[in-house]
Length: 398
Image 1 (tube, rainbow, N blue to C red):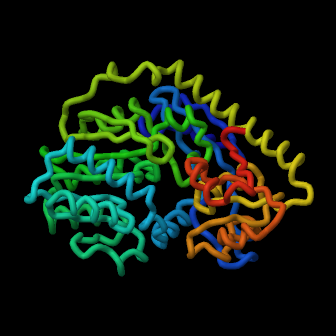
Image 2 (cartoon, one colour):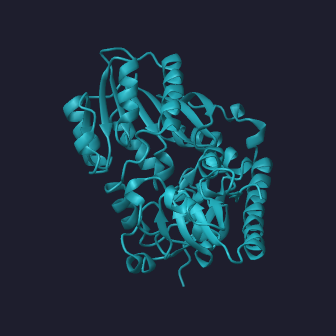
Image 3 (spheres, one colour):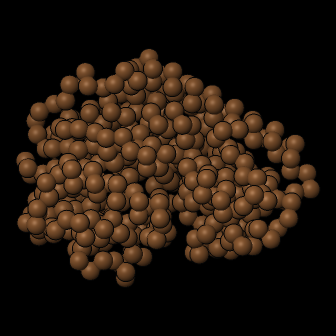
C-alpha cells in the first residue's frame, strides 16, 4: 500500500499535525431543488497544522476542485451595496494612500476583483490605469467601464497575455484570494510574471492568530484552503523572490492582515515575528482551537435538546461559512429554514440538506422559533434585524 506523505504547501515540510473535523459539502453555492440539494456530494474535512511554518491547511479532497472552479466561474455578487463593505473599502483605501505612492501614469491590477466595486471606489480617490482579473462570468455586464476587465482565471496563459499586451504592473492588489489558492508558490510565480523590480504588492488574508484567538470556526471551511500567519507569509514571499516591507492588522472578516511586498532578492529576518507566533505558542493555540471547536459542537447539541421541543430551528446566514457550520454542527437534523437577505438565494436549498432558504419577513412571521447565528462576525447586526422578540443563539460564545 502506498502512503503519500503530506507536505506543507508553503514550506514543504512533512512534520504535520492532522485533525478530522467532520463531513461537509463544498460550500459557497445553493441548489434550486430539494432533490438536487440532498444528492450533493459530502466530503471528509481534515485540517493540517505545519510544525515548521505554523500554517493551517486543508487535506486535498478528491472531486472538490471541479466544484470550486464551477463556484468561482458562476459566483454571484452579493456585497455590492453592503454598508459593511463600503466602510471596509474606505479604511483599506486610507491604508493604501498612506503606504503606496500611486500616480496617474501607474498601472494597478486587482486579482480576484469580484464586481470591481473596490477598484471603482479606489479610482475615485486615486488616478491611475486600473485592471481587474475576475473568473466570474456573471459580473461582466455591470462591471465598471473605467476598469479593464480580464474575465478569466488567473493562470499562466492570462499572466503571459497581461505582460504582452499591457506590460508589467506597478501595483498588484490581492484581497482575500490567496487563502483560496491550492498552490501558493505557483500563484506567486504568476504574480512575478506581471511585475518588475519596482512593483509593489498588497496581499490581504484572514490572520490565523485571529482565527484561533476569536474562535472563527466558520473560517476553516474547505474553500479556505490555507490560513496564513506572519512567519508562513515571510517564508512564502522570500522563496518566490518577494520581500515583505510591512504588515498591518485589520478587523475585516473577524481579523485579517495586510502585507505590503516588493520584488527583490532580499530576505526578511525571522526575528521580526512576534512572540505570539513562536512555535510553542502556536501549537498551544491550535490544540486549544480544536478542543474548543468540538466542545462548541457538544454545547450546541445540548442547547438544541433542551430548547427545541415544539419550536422551529432557523439559521441566519446562507453563505459559504453558514453552510459549513450547518454541516459541522450537524444542524440538518434540527433545522428547517435558513434566513438570508440575498434575493438570489431565496427559495433555494443549502447543499447536502433539505433546508430551505427564506427571507427575513417570512421568518419573523413564524412563532416559537429558535434562531441560530450562522454569520458570527455579524452577530450585532443580525440581532438588530430580528428584534427583541427572538433570541439569537451564538455558536461561538455559548
